[in-house]
Image (tube, rainbow, N blue to C red; front, top):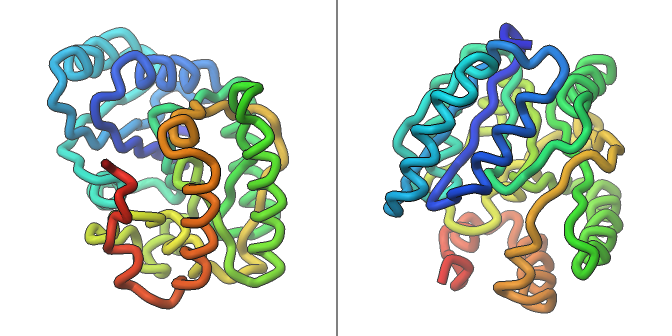
Length: 237
């Protein structure tokens, strides 16, 4: 896949989570030589050291490049500017790929169905997994409303179509993933149905379900209001 796919991971003080994410990538089919761009803005020495270790530990499998990041939108944009392959995967540092065929199958799903953007469902700890099942329903509703929502934790793009959609806006501080994915033609958006991606429930543990649910509704209501996404809405506090 190294000639087809580049992975971009925004990062700040992710520590061991980033190591586990990269380790899970190395088990993917045909992953040898794939470029992984880590857009990092860590100020924690332990996390910085982990990234340096990863560059050495995974050198036989992955071509890891580290660049300056920022907020997720800034890091993703900075990474995407360096991509030369026809496909780009935005992956968050707390995502774990549990099945070795998830990347290859997602890529094939995109190619065979002539899609511009593909995402996947997520699993998390049992206590919070019901939230993601509700999110699956909400995502289906977003498709019916012709305003697709692909979480930035796993966004697989046709690179040309990503730029045609405008790319990530570095000024956006909240729901930048929805702001971008909602611009995709609904017939060019797909969900590859798999249970092979795990993510940490930390967002819900930190903010709670009601906070996240209300902001999701507000994001839809304000989908045509650029100023809404520039405000961070205390998400990063």
